[in-house]
Image: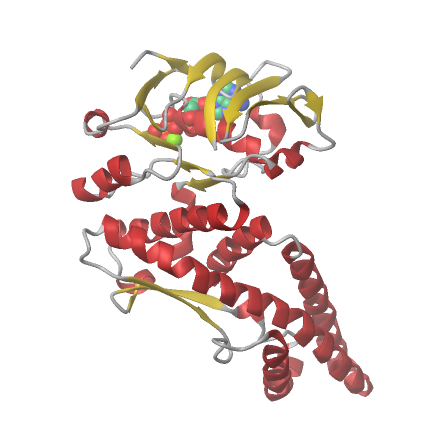
Length: 364
Ligand code: ATP
Ligand code: MG
């Protein structure tokens, strides 16, 4: 998929902008000029909320009462256009036909985004890593979102019961029933996550090796209360029931469920050592980039839609070799990169450079 052009009106600090794009696009300029705003505007066409967590009404330019974004995009088969209008609510049209919801555009337009916010995937605790896998799975497996909802419902109910048990021990038999529901829902999540990690790994390894000039090896492993590898869903369910039995006394005492996929983690390893504990800044950044681009490759393999890659401020902390790999060796996707450093732009062999200042394009 390729975004051919964009037209922006009243979006954050961008009052009016018309731009054509190439396969590789570098958006550069000083701080606070509108670089991230531009790729954030493109990202909204995936139907998602801003990757910076901003609510829609705050995306409208100060003192304006609407924002309008329009793109022309193409794939092997046809040229299409999509438009987003943000007023009190966000609405969207595809080829001039109104969509039932703005998020429905996501069926046609896919993107993988890297933002410095995503470094928390390596630097912070397990919830960020689970979020990465869960979001990726929601994009490729139609039933995953519901499976996740069902699991969270079981978890909440089990936790309520655990707290009640401290006052009403006679409710103990209920716990056996909830353990079964919990294990059934949890096994589906674990199975899908394990499969995803295994599918993602070869792609992530390839990008990471490219970034490090073949000197470093990346590994990722899903870590839970027991070994998940090679287990089918019903086998995971049996193991989870056994694990819940073992942790029952502690769970009742603490009033929370201490085991299950809500506590699982993804180990990210560089040459066998934890990237979180031992990785340098550049290595940690390279891990996240590798995982994001691998997510993109997998999406392409599984859905036939080639996503675009939006890489916000991806170059900082990377040495020249790693920067060159990103600039000149990623051919599979249309790619948008923001950066402040003019020298980075000079090393781009092919592609378009867009100089942004105060929400306007100054020319290549
Ligand atoms: P950096 O290099 O620091 O990341 P950037 O070029 O990516 O900078 P942006 O995040 O795109 O900068 O933001 C540019 C400016 O947009 C900021 O100065 C901010 O105040 C402004 N801005 C944000 N929201 C709005 C809005 N709703 N209306 C007008 N301006 C806004
Ligand atoms: Mg920025």
